[in-house]
Length: 169
Length: 169
DNA sequence: CTCCCTGCAAACTGTTTGCAAGTAC
DNA sequence: GTACTTGCAAACAGTTTGCAGGGAG
Image (cartoon, rainbow over all chains, first blue to last red; front, side, top):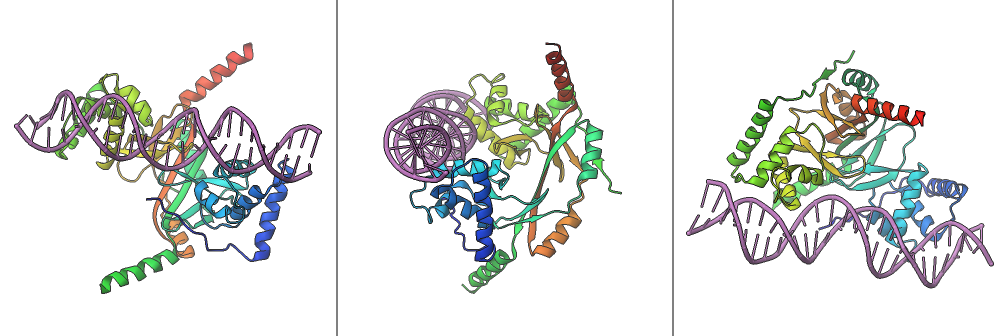
């Protein structure tokens, strides 16, 4: 049974959404890629989503504004957006990948295990740990992952509500 | 000043290796599973490896002591070992899974991107970060991943050596 | 002797590639 | 008009499932 998540949350005002989308389209164009209807549709979805989305979800969502869209084109467009640093790949607990608009600078993600909403945060201070570990174990440490998983406040409320309903049965 | 605790992997002696393997086999048996040649082979490989191994690697390695072994049995055995907490799944950079003997308590991994050797470490102090983030963003944080990637000292030396060889050409 | 376990083959999922038709510039 | 893009179909890789034969206890 595959879960399909419908995106209803908007990131910002219409105006701001258009700004981000336009920015990304400009960057695509400036990098020598052509602006086509399928690409516009995928960019619009990725530039606006607050959720981590896997390729199939991006496909379903983007097809709403480009009905001829194929899944293959989604893969290819996501590849280009990642290459340009506009989105980043998120490693999910189940091993699959999802994507989300890239954060600025070095940031990490806090992801809701229930609805897949994601928040960036910084402020982790791993530098001392990495330095002393590298020295101690003789590793040249190149990269690190830090990702937090939890339940967002909205999903907590939903869960409470459903528990109450079950309690009255 | 943060305290860092390093737990080094020690090359186990033959005797210790056998001990670990036996321990795991006992746990399997105690859990109601039968001890068969294919399972012994997989357990032996997993109980002794200092490297993260994907199912195919486990298969190739284990088949050396059980030539009739099938890949499917490797998947099924790894599933049981994970269920018993003897091994843990490692999320790799490329999205695939590997497995390694489980660490004791809450630990994290430092993995060599070149040879896949892995070291456990603890001493990350993420509790304050997690607490303040949870409060600030309204998340109930349930879990976190921290994984470091780098190049181990042996691979660094190999790389240097091959650079020198290339330099003389 | 019984039930669990195994290997094979086939199904399945997520992703990539080859290609002819279509389209941005 | 040219070269890049697209969607389809098929190939691919990793993983899971159905099943009949085989082996542990």
